[in-house]
Length: 133
Length: 410
Picture 1 (cartoon, rainbow over the protein chains, first blue to last red):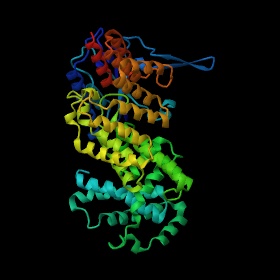
Picture 2: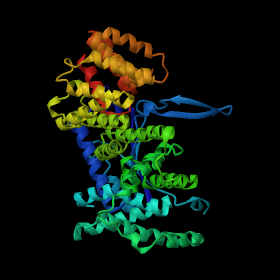
Picture 3: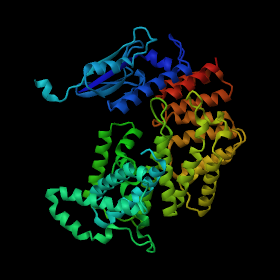
Picture 4: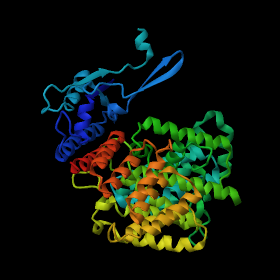
């Protein structure tokens, strides 16, 4: 069974990572390096245990495009999110023995020093058949 | 594959084994699978037993048997199996005697041309080249390009099907066709190198392997074709790669060339690159790779930014633009002009580029503008331009660099 672990962040979080002074103090090079090292360790362990399927990080929300159709023609909005809105920042797709194991893995992606931070875990459908019952 | 000596040996032999198989039996796609399996068998066995006396013959034998098995397994292709069985006298399973000249010596080159066929999409060319000629596993290629293994498997499978369906002959093309195909091969190797050199998005990535692989393949091409542009490409890669040790700070941040500690550049690679480009240029078949290598050589030779031969670099960029008008080359040209004739001259060129849609909103144009404004003493405008560049960049390391420059200007 596959589980999608979703990590969130706002434009403000991305700005802190990019070293841009704003409402939140920018991350120091050491903090950034520590974060990268932690992510790398976790993913390396998941790759070694054979549970890692895929993991990707997304660029800052300002680079997002929202696409709608208006009168059948696509209309594009650049950077559609508010500064403080939490959006998907990255994901790790794992294939593991149980929901509990996926939860255990997910907990490693939550920064213990960041009050209130969370990630979501969602079981992945095996195929369309499951939806049809 | 824990043993680097075995790994190197296998990587070097992979295209030769595949080439030998395809030359003898055809069936590029199946032969490629068979070769991969033979390599895998060797990789698991040789570190313990040591390589056999003639590793290439061993691999060809194992791969030939595997190819026969694979073809046999295709029930619907029984007729093809008969052909292979007939084409497969037992004595051909062994290596030729040592005194026979190595007729298959150019197989790696033929494979390279085959994998870089213009009818394949670039992603297919790259994947197939790294697997068939580079001897990397699909998983390794997938990891290098940060895509799931299943995706890379599909890309490679599609590319192989296309080659099979097209019925391309197993030979290096001749005449004008050869020149056009060589361009594609050079471009594919250049893309592989760049993928390893600069990651366009995301956090710092270590893709040294891709760079080393691109250099290895460019070296092969240079040795086997004696083409000045192949030499130019190899020189360009060496001269660029030589700066790697000074390119990132201790915390993984990006260090621009102007601030790099030039003593940390790899002197041997620079010397080889300069020697290569020096030998290629006088042959009067100047192309874009030789020109870019010549520019890289001027940078690498200079003891500092100030002591760089900027007028010469400006002239080389202008030759490059005469061959092929490209907005990114125009950006670099503008910076070189600024260094040779002062920031104002460069800024005028950059502002003119604002009308070119391909590069108007490119973070590199804003970063170059910011840098030249800073040189011109316009601190406030420079700061704004650094921030504008950071906003447009998708690379966290680049963003951090640009923000730190902006912060320095208060």
